[in-house]
Length: 155
Image (cartoon, rainbow, N blue to C red; front, top):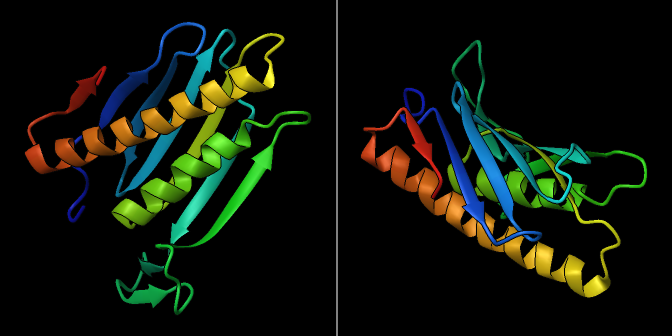
């Protein structure tokens, strides 16, 4: 993503109600901001910030290794969860994966809720979020390669 990103914003969806989820993905300079929501009551339940193992110093332009020997593609991830919420797992999954894939700082927030969800329903919702992650990665990658879109919707 040299010289800034080509795609500025997109919306990607997966699943059917009440297991429907969406991701709004935006370029913030060279970095990426993602909001994942869905279910019966979208909200902000958790946030995650992932930083790449190697970054470019914003002032000097020099390559700075944040953590030598990191194989994951990101050197650290910070998470914050709202009291009683488990949504942060979704935010962490999106932030870590996008950071590893694109080598930029990624902030992700998530809030997916279904009233009185059973363990099976939560598992189905997480499977749908994994599907959404795959679709989101492919859509963002394709939009960056194509370079012709300023907005991409509903992949």
